[in-house]
Image 1 (tube, rainbow, N blue to C red):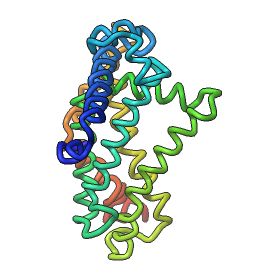
Image 2: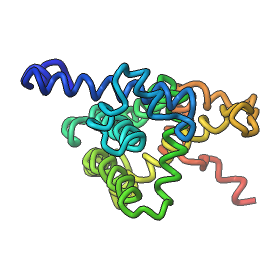
Image 3: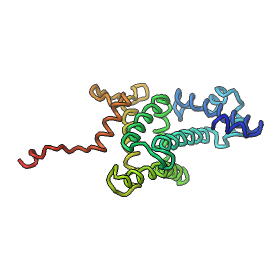
Image 4: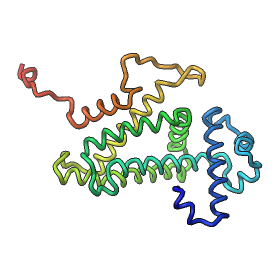
Length: 237
């Protein structure tokens, strides 16, 4: 929340938000260093400089409550990233192609700033999505719908302007977000070291996994220009 928004809160409310933020930041650092499973609430409390009981006052589900608070923050960031990149609610958007290119670059930059934490979040998100806990699985479905709701207006505007083909807008929005997400996850997986028990993959000729601009150029060209060529002679032969 911005400083101007915080200023409208009472002193007690501002202090409560400050404490929650400090606890969340401490949890992020411990999760990034230890992994979610190995992290303990005692370590998080010590890092945040609060008692363990105080953490439960703010996050009654303890470690899992902190994990979902971090998920909330990340999804809020991604939601705002989509809206600000494509234009708020689809109003006065930039070139749709340019906006998509910018989204890829911003997504990679966002990942790079939270690399270790992002790996944990991806792992835990997949685990919880396929868990038997219906409520937790529904949380991720709701967040996905929220991201789609942020992008669909821009997709519809681009279709109306003739910038992209007229196809089911929600399906197009879903595909665009998934390819960005999948490429970021692919990069994340290739960078896992042997230290966490997995085999590191070596892709020496894949600069797009490490260069945001290269990744953006690749995906934009693939999705907006396609795999076909203007040379039809090969098909004729």
